[in-house]
Length: 205
Ligand SMILES: N[C@@H](CCC(=O)N[C@@H](CS)C(=O)NCC(=O)O)C(=O)O
Image 1: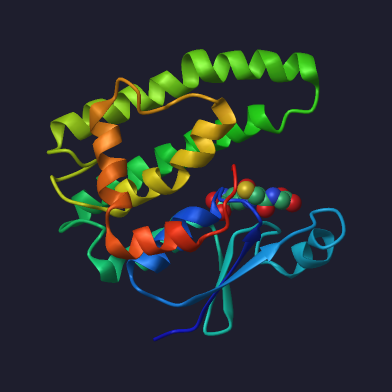
Image 2 (image 1 turned 180 degrees about the vertical axis):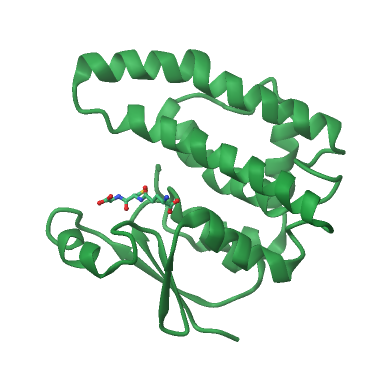
């Protein structure tokens, strides 16, 4: 089994889909958390492939970019679909979720209070419902999963970012969206994921 070392900040954020996938696969991993963005991060940043986290080291070699890392971990776990077209669909859902998370993070991290309120309103009233309603519709039409009537890494990605999104927006994002709620519940019921969620640090984002 390869040696996995994940470095990310001490939040769920983009690290959590990777932690979920490593846990789903039953892989042990070093879960390194940069605790202090002010003092620690500037020293680490230049050592990373593209100046950002998460970084996953596999047997000592560093890889960055959340989506390709997730895809890499998902493939041997049969979570990328049966055909190349399945993979394209699943990748597109994961990329849309990544886009949604980024837009939520942009409002959440905005320091100017006036601008923050404006961005928050736009995110809550437009961005969030736009993506979530499309995802709900997709799950409804795909046998309760995002693609092909079976579990893929997109379902795991959604569940892994769910809590950060819901907490940043202070809304129940699956309310009135029974298929999204069911995806989340199913993923949280997978024994290896359940174990991870029980033992992970209890954080808001
Ligand atoms: N495209 C990258 C984006 C990574 C990213 O935005 N990382 C943020 C944290 S969520 C970061 O490292 N911020 C610190 C910095 O840019 O200095 C990915 O998907 O992994």
